[in-house]
Length: 111
Length: 110
Figure 1: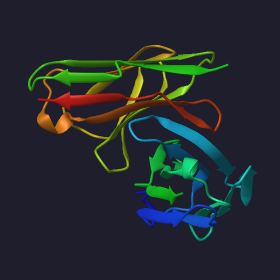
Figure 2 (figure 1 turned 180 degrees about the horizontal axis):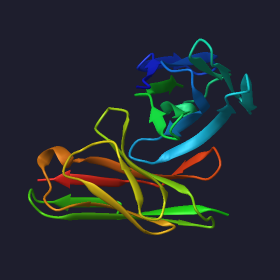
Figure 3 (figure 1 turned 180 degrees about the vertical axis):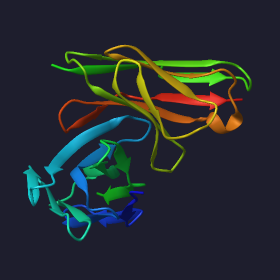
């Protein structure tokens, strides 16, 4: 059974710092991995999608990497801003096309 | 462009009452559809997913059920709500590899 874990569970940093969020999964037989952002009480916004054959994807200040063989992904946020404060979730599409989520990292960027 | 509609946004229901949450997708055809539940401060738990009309896979054998009467319509139901059914319910769709989510329904069972 695929399990997705995210560490840390919560993170508080001053504005301007570069930071790394971690995601790990137990079964490397995935089709892709997707990073989402969730603001309080809201739905999820897709940030980056990495196919299983890819190593990384970039969008603006965000960079996501994928090491499928070791079951790991990282989301790198450069020059963090208070507007980046949110919960960040990673999810993998498993061999049955189910989308399995981690429990998220709650990020607070202090002005 | 594709959009997903989920309603209602908030709902307060008494224990033992029925439930019907609806999700519709526009601008696409034959999407994979998903229902998730998110308890307070927790991750997303997959409840049901569907790869086509009338095809429902259940991940959580509780007092919830799902139906897909039309290609772009996904309904989450319950005959009798429990207190433990409270949570944030999210509908999602995928066509190709990327998933997109609705804005969610906050359900409080009292």
